Image (cartoon, rainbow, N blue to C red; front, side, top):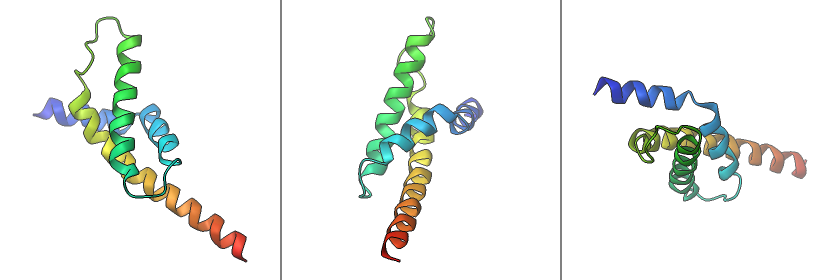
Length: 93
C-alpha cells in the first residue's frame, strides 16, 4: 500500500502529466472535462512512458496514474476557470 501511495505522490509531482491535462482542460468549459481530461491524460502519459521505456508494460501505472490525473484535472479546471473569468471581466471593463 505504501508503494502505491509513493507512486501516486511521484505522479502528482510529474509536470508532463500536469501539462497534458492543462492543455486538455482548455477545450471544454463544463465540469465534464474533469473526468475526461483525467482519463485521457492518464492514458496519454502511460502510452508515452511505455514507448520510451522498453521494459515497461502498458497499464502498470494506470491505477495510480488515474488518481494523480484526477487531482491534476481538478487543479487545471480551477486554473482554467480563473483565467476565463479574468479575461471575461477584462473584456467587460
